[in-house]
Length: 429
Image 1 (cartoon, rainbow, N blue to C red):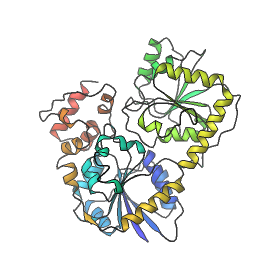
Image 2: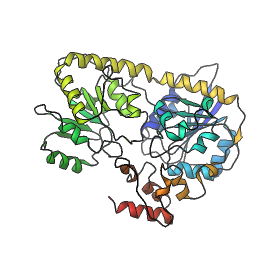
Image 3: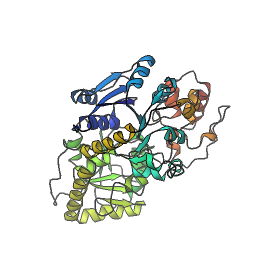
Image 4: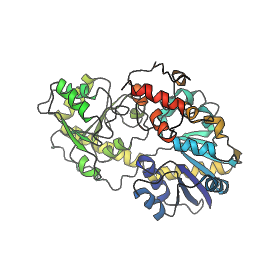
């Protein structure tokens, strides 16, 4: 039996679901794997932790550096659950340099902020993306030929057994909603412009998720003369019941968003809800236009798609059924586990190598932050920030988490440059 040691900052959201699904998948006797998980922080919720333990895995919570070094030394494979979380980078840079077999499962696209550090791809025995769209990233495409045998895709989406399948109702009236974050680093900042283009009497959109930016969205709706258009439902632990009230998902994301697996999109599709998405790299690798959903490029095209779906309920039901069948087959935990067994077997045929993470990320917290920025040069040593980024990408810089300046400053409050950059960005809100 081989030991795979996962390193993750937490077990929340998508990564928690993905790891628990992977570890719960049926083992093959010919290639047994035991999973241990280093969770760098105390889990806020115990759901995925309990699932991992019930599946025979082990979770070590917030271990000290000595314990981490010992666990790494005894692991056959170290699997890094990667996105630019400050706790992860701190852990790696404090780690004692020693021979390891490194497999990286990347949970961000790398297309925009945050980028995937090229040096991290170089030192990994295998570097696995969660969406094919990552091959379109500049840093990835530049290395794709050199590292072709070490780069692959294993989606972290899946696990829909607890969600109801489509009911086949082709007479239900149009019911539009959105499921996910209302943060403008994820949701399209011009979301209201798209919705307002729809000319259907009493058109409403049910917003399922956090209430961030509610006031901004309500103000934009009022300015567009559509005061009653939004129905804010807030966060719900009962996702299926909320999604059951809609049959169209208006999933219009910021073109510079950082997502890959898009669990919210996949869960809606698994229930037969027809998605309408923008022509962004990640979404077009999930949605097939007019077969499992609609891909649009403008408010007018969005309105045309909604109107067509309103007037063709039977076709809407058919497309929803195709969406459900496709994602349930394509994004199954069994397929994910089978892919990982293949990669684990390949990595086990290679020798352990010393990985120098300080050479990847740098020596200090401000260098760690900059190592994952698409335009590190805009952050000046004197604390100034020379913004040159697209309007839509600007929202990524204002995130409180997701590896932003503010996120790093939370972990390293004494870092002078992080303090200065955060002050400059705060003044631009």
